[in-house]
Structure formats: structure tokens, C-alpha cells
Length: 236
Image 1 (cartoon, rainbow, N blue to C red):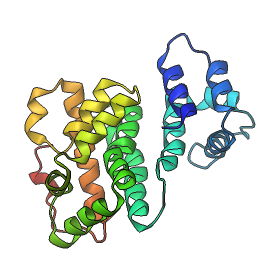
Image 2: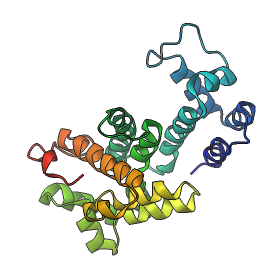
Image 3: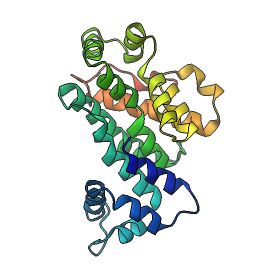
């Protein structure tokens, strides 16, 4: 993960950090700063007057939202190349964040939408790592998944001895992000452990699973929609 993003995450998670501390960090990356200002002035938020500076943007958006925007803006830098495979992975992850955020707002789900955004955005970071480090092998994995209709976790385990979920959890731990996020990513394809996890982690894990499956059913990040996927049959 880019150094600035890591520093911003740590600053936001530190109760002693001020808005000015966070702004100074973001100021070091012009691309991320511009992205935050652009989003602040978009119709998505609809603020009554133009947001011209980062301090103003952080005050209006809130530090957790800014943290998520910085992570989202930085995620694209983790792709060393950007071919069709990377486009599919990026499409799925970049839409999973907002989708999880939206679903988390339902009363029955009772999850923090801001944390849900981060989890959705990061839940397939293990796939990105494998696509970067084992490009040809992972291309074979993706072709097998799409052609044979098998799960990524099963095909990855055959090829590498571990799944993208396990690797993703290790990446999250390496980056110093919360342990609850690592657990969620590690088990989002493992419904059998939902009853063994802390309630808040289990809810976030289930939400991440359903978010990912909803996108797959619609064909987001895949070669074609999984129209026959029965979401109501999922333990999550």
C-alpha cells in the first residue's frame, strides 16, 4: 500500500490526530488530494457551496470517510499492470465498497457502513497480490473459474495451496490494518465459521460475502453474470 495511505489510516485511527495532521499527510500526494476534492464537490454529497480546500473537505466528510476515500484512491496503485484481468478485479472491488456501504445501512444488517466500505474495497486484495506476483499462473486460475464455473477459493487452493482470502488477510496484517478486517477477509468464503466469530465480525463477514455474491450474480468483475446463483441459500 502506498506510504501516504498507510499514514493516513494510522492518523485517522489515532484519537490524538487532528484534522490538520491528516490534511498535511494528504497534501503530500497531489493525486489523492485532488481526488478527495473532486468527490467532495460531486453530486454524491451535494454540499451547498464549493469545497475549495482539504481542511474544509475533511471537516464536511468526516475523517473515516476521508480514510476510505484515500484507501480507494490508493488501491489502483497496487495494480502493476492493467489488462483485462486487472480491470475485472478492479471493477469488482471498487464497486464492492459502495455496495457494502449501502447494504450496511439496512436496520436488519446493523453494520457500520464506513467499515463496510473498507471491507468491501479490500476483500479481494489477495487476488490482486496473486495477479501481480504470479501473473501467468493466476490467469490460468481465472480461466478455470470462468470456464468450469468453479469457485476461486477451490481453484486457488489447488494451484497455490491457499486461497486469495487467506493471502488477503496476511496482506491486511502486513499493512497494519485492524485485525477484525483481516478476520473478515480471511473468512468471507468460509460460512462454517460465522457462528464462531465475534458477532460484529460475523455480521461484517456475512455482509462482505453477500455483497461479493450480489456483484457476481450481476456479472460485475466476471466474464458473465451468475444468473442461477441463489443468494437466499447462502448461510451469510
